Image (cartoon, rainbow, N blue to C red):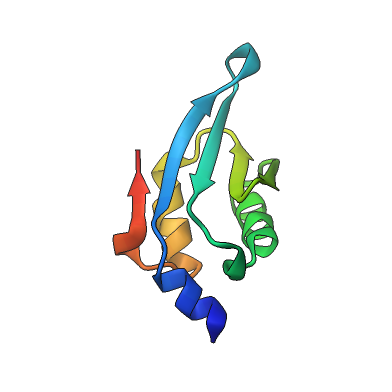
Length: 86
């Protein structure tokens, strides 16, 4: 019950960050700890067939998945109104 409430009361931001050697990372911020970040990270890595990690309260996925991320988060149970793609 707490997990579903936590999912509805947050502002999620999805953005692309360029790092060393021109590699792109999809960064997801704004997901609170109650929503079980490790489990969400594992699901996203499997869904997009990429590497990634959960550091400092944010999810980092290797590659540019910005275009498909909003639908993936909605499928995971997050309300569409709270997700902002930059």
